[in-house]
Length: 526
Image (cartoon, rainbow, N blue to C red; front, side, top):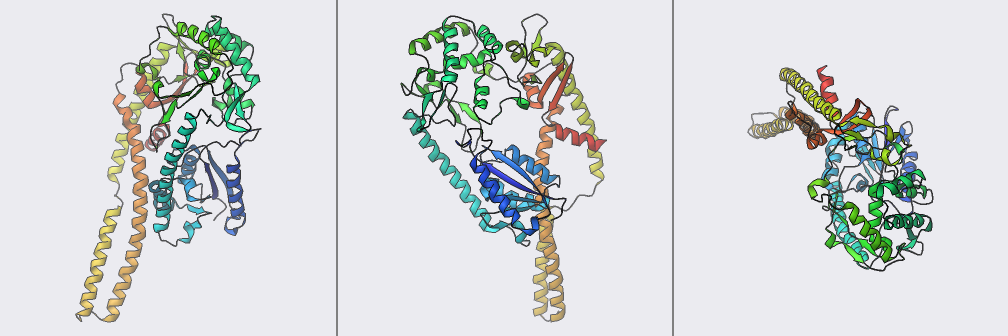
């Protein structure tokens, strides 16, 4: 392995461990995996001259490949920057046996990447041209079935705990912490509880939510997220580490949470399916509510009084599900929140964090709504026009190229070779061919068949990679439908644009959802 190659350590754990506290930056599971992999590398001379790089997914499921660390690893493999991947076991790569088998048998060999699984004793460099075979396929099938079975068992166990009124979150929520003697019970965190009581009191007294938010931000009162990070949580909910202030939604969320009155509420969200990471809201009638499970921060009377005032504040708001989807892509460059329009006739977009937090840079983010929307419409039309020109040019070039041999044509040639071997044997038995000539021809046919077998594996891998690329290209080229886009459409913009950051009163910084594909296509045209 040359010095230019990198040995990639890939580490994955499924959920945040409870031991990520007291200033720890990562879980012991990550630490243990890292120690195991480092020890393995240091004990093998063939890794001695290679540099080591780590790719980590902390808190991501193995049921699919949609993990930032893993996706970055694959990108670097495709760029030729990684020569070998080392994992603790194959289930770290994933628990979907079809996807992992495809990576081990097709994609990584095609990219020239060696894969080592320490605990499985698997090293693709030791296969000597053979496939990983039934051993790897079966092991990954077992992982997949185990993962599915485990998912059902865990779900059942969690529901049982919920119905007993036990707390199942990885951290205590704002105002509470886990009881050190029983992690499924809550005790009041007095430092945060003071803030919660004050918010209930202010709403109970009839104060408007925007007045409350202004007071909390001016006094520098920590939000639940900021408070949690100060207590050792390593998650960051804000872009580039910037912390947002209080807003009216945060106040409403606290006031409506029955847990502050001493009742446990669970099961408000559920995963769409076994293979999905997406959570969906559960109908309120299906929530699991167990009353009087822990000490309330406020009394039932204080809770009811504050909520009575809250209902009067939100009265008249639209509650149809259609209004819940926010497809706006125009965002603040500092906190990442979606900009909101003002109420004036010539509406100005503003950052809600800036309204609630006057001394933050978000307060200076402004742009005319009409200007922002018109700019995005013109940008979409221009991008569609450029990509259509590029597509025509590339199709012209591709028409002049000789098509490469595909896997099926190579297999057809292998079948012809097999038929030639049988024919040669029949000629030999019939006395039409000498033994020396028959052996010579058989040796030549076998050598050619071995070459074709290797070519088939390479062609299959090339087709898999190409198919994935074509899917991405098809998605990217949907922008052609909007060559003559007339007006601003939130859904259209959300399907094409990742974000449009307002960098000034007349300047937007647009990040396209398929920006890397667009760049590649336009680059090839140039």
